[in-house]
Length: 489
Image (cartoon, rainbow, N blue to C red; front, side):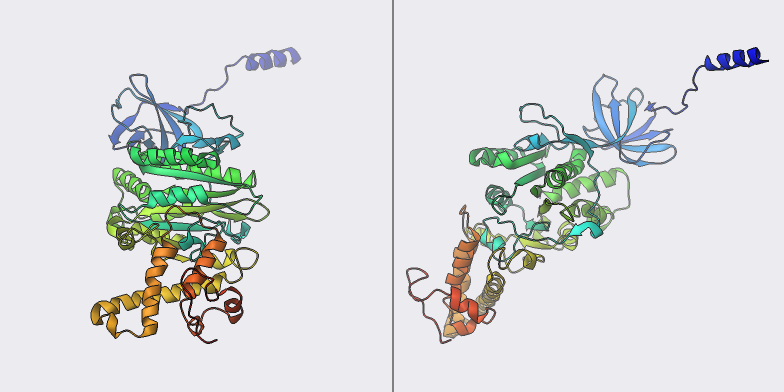
């Protein structure tokens, strides 16, 4: 009996292992639509799973699962679907999501839209390989944004301060110098002395000329040393554009929360990203929303914007500057409209100021930084910052209103005080907003603001505390070449 049992056990051990009935390679492409492949009779396929596509000529392409059911999978192909043979092309599912190699060595490197080096530099030694489908920061784990990032731009630092952990969009228009403004911010941006600071710059759908401008400017000024540059060109695959901001934010999260660095993420141009989103939605034959954009665009943008912030217990931070081009200068267009709902304010570029030769052409009246108060004040910028910003805004708004009035009744009908406000509006644009490539420290910005305000009687400085007027207002002959006429206190 025992011998029989032993022989039976040995025979069982010699049986071949049971093979899985699930195949991971398929030649079942049903049809091709734009950048999408529709694969049928698939099993155990997951959303966002990466795919290897082996064409009939032996070439390889990469894709990602956009949608899956029990029998079908929709695969987006990064390199495009041109030339794919639906009968002989093999689809191989990797059983992993999209990932990117991250390392401190990425600083100073130029990468393509999916994080592969394209600058002919040495191979990057990866410290970790992370999935790019990160999640928004848990609200419970969020730390309130604090301290400011100095951009060297008076219209931003003085009136719409950028705070660490904030997401602040810049609304531009076709032909406006948004790229020049971005390059200047990248050159000049800094945090407190002694703190590690770097920039992750993701350019999506830009032209070769724009790409050459950024690379030459970074190399000329030495800014590239602290920049991780993701570059997706206009003639690169559209699908790659969808991954670029997520790759950039994954690198930013690694540098910020693993190496305790303060990271400024600059994303341009989000309009190109949204156009790619619409193209994919159309190929999937989804029901369109406003102006043909997918109905889930708000959710999709939120998954990008909400990855900015600070985390409790972590020293690092992620701040976002998002640049987008408003089609037809329409701020109510779905892209700026939805972006404005998610982010904390906006910087708006003015075509009228640009035509007058003012750079940067920032129209401060519709601009807003909702978290400005968290990053300014004593110990951060200066105690009088909030009061000065309020007074500048009020005086400039009154000067702009008087311009419209003058076009109707003429300047001769204005009072002496009204003419001061009219003159202030002109000086404010020419001296405070317009600064060319000058890099202004926050102290210089505030000094210039007080100099401009000193043209008014102190009785008109109603938004500034008396103690600040007595401490900071220039006396006669201190503000510049022309003497100042101050009203009674």
